[in-house]
Length: 312
Image 1: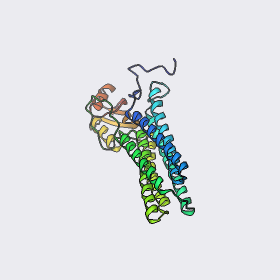
Image 2: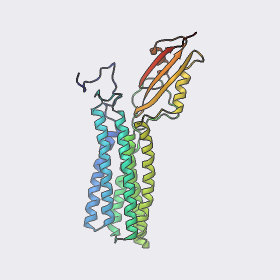
Image 3: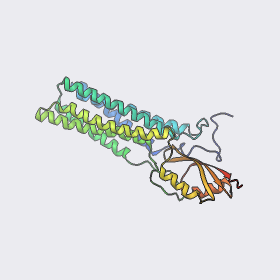
Image 4: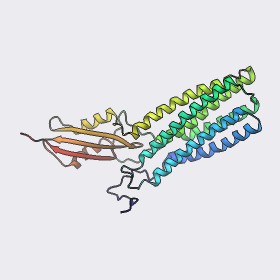
């Protein structure tokens, strides 16, 4: 059988990853806006002999590249959703895209620190008037991008009556990565405007590189947080204690039913998988326990093993 043969309804592992996600459309729009502003800043930096503007334009170019990785992750996950090579679908491509974006954020933060220290040691002449105008325009563009990406991605349609417990995650890590990139651009634009105004009116030219260092520290903190959450998904970290406890409360019944093994992990944005082993004095079919659990908890891929207790 061809490896790319689509799944049947009974054994589908797409988990709606074959549908275009809301974050994909948002990211495409922001890429177009960011790329346009990148060209304007780089051209202005060359025309006005402003190294500050040129550096900001190159910084925006790096973020446009990172957003392109985000878009690629969306498209790849959607187009490969029916590929049987992916045992649990392509949901983790989302986390991989977010992780890659977070690593790039960390790299950009280091570059910002390096450039800022170099500026402190070797100050350059800045064309303040032109730089301020373009920086304000960049802030407006970045603000629009933050607004576009700032909303939570739409929830998948769910006709069941499941209860969300503390510790459950429904983040689109790919979208969050893109959001943090444009938020970082917005922050650097604000710091740049503040620094340029301080340099123009008070002669504090050292404020420009200082704000670069402050912005880099904040960007690094965001990237570390995103790296942690995406790594949990990529390494199949056990699901939250709260959700595990809820599963135990639903299935365990005193001495009658005991969970002997529980594996709970994320296989995509708001997509949980679980493998559960049950030991009981009065065994019922696995389907019985599945229905009992799924009526209360949303688990997209569930396997239950039932073993009898041997009374001697």
